[in-house]
Amino acid sequence: MIGHRFKGSLQPAMKLLLLAGVKFPLIILCSAFVSCAYFNTVYNAKNYYRQGVKTVKHDTLMVDSENFDKTIEKSTAIIVKYPDTRWVDDALYMMGASYYFKGDYVRSLEKLDFFIENYPGSAFYHEVQYLRGLAYFKLRRYGSAIAALREAAGSKKYRKKSLLAMLYVYYGDANYSSLYAIADTLTEQSLRYAERRNVLRFTAMAQFEEKRYQEALDTFIRLLAITRDEGERRNLKLRIAETYLELGEYELCRNFLVGETAPEFRDLLGDLYLKIGNIEGAKEICYELAQNGFPDIAAEAYYELAQISEVEDSIDLAVGYYDSALVKSPNSEYGLKARKKSEVLKRIQTLTTETEDTVRAEFLLAEIYFTALDDLPRALQGYEKVYRNHPESKWAPKALYAHLWIADKIYKDDTLAPKLARTLIGGYPGTEYAMSAEQILEAYDTKLRTDSLDQGR
Image 1: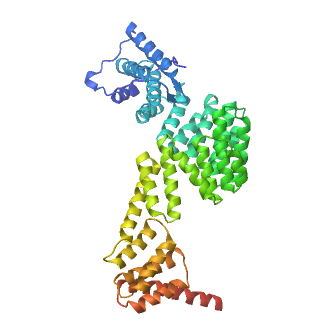
Image 2 (image 1 turned 30 degrees about the vertical axis):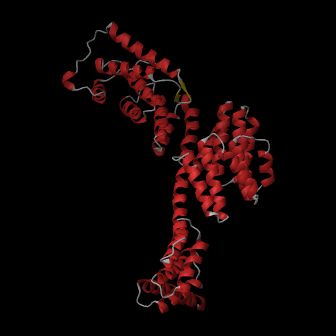
Image 3 (image 1 turned 90 degrees about the vertical axis):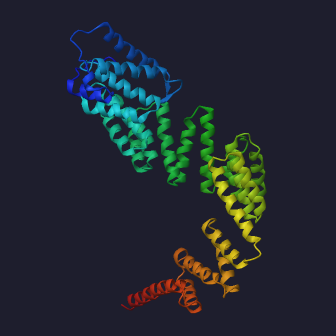
């Protein structure tokens, strides 16, 4: 593939020199004489590139990037020293590909985009489009990725590879309808084992994300039937068990988890126990995983123990578990969530023990349950306690309005909300809360009159 002859034109060559950072006063154009140094430079660039590609597996550089660094160095030398050579498109292609495999997708696209603009007739055109599609995907620029891959798919050689790459892009972009269309197109073609597995895998994952659990289950089971690698089979069993859990097929889920000792399976079994109300079983698994040597898994286990403790109203214990999750893995997903929950619960502990301004503490507790914990029943209980037990307090109208707002905006209770609005207007006239309540009540009255007129017609 490297070695295709292409007559470079002088105008794009000049642009290339700018792209390489060379200033025009320093440019010395090649003479017609092709020196040994010229051939050596071209040969070395290709050789380093071939050696570098051997170290790549699934678009991932498995060792250091020395060969690609040397490829870039020699390719730059070709462009700078021999800008009108017929090897310019070779050099530019190798530079763009080398930056891609090094993981420098921005620089890779600089070279590849320049290539497409200036060398559309090159034999590398479709391969460059394919690489552009992959680089744009890595940068999560999904629209540009699809556009490039569609161009690459115009080549018989890159059609199947480009369609397979589109599965990744459409899944990343959550464009599942387009993903299914590509999967259908690929299914009509002759696919190798790995390609067939990829089509089924992305189809199943998309179906799961769309909560089409029965279809996802069927596809996962088909995929499991053709999967030989034990590690991949284990992962598929985990996904099947997850899907059974979502479907409410608890016994089938348990059957898939029995005998599996890996932490992921144990964690899912804990979720199953919580679903069916086996709290002690869930705790036992969480205790087991909390002692796991993997910090992220232990942090998740402590976080789940804390949540169970919250449900059981063991706030002190919950705080201890959240703090343990934070210690185990402070920057993980569950470590960061644990930090927030611990801070909230510690604030609750402080307010619960408040002895001076107890009404303020009760109101702030209700606010925390509402805004930080999304626990509406406790929040409403707290608000109601404030305005019923302490109607003369400055916190009473605030609490009553909070109850009104939840009844109106969240529960959309057209019986309770007007009742609370009238209570607020009558009990605390002239306050800002009463004025807001008047607007809410007026909206309900207008709706009631409109509904009455509609019914009378």
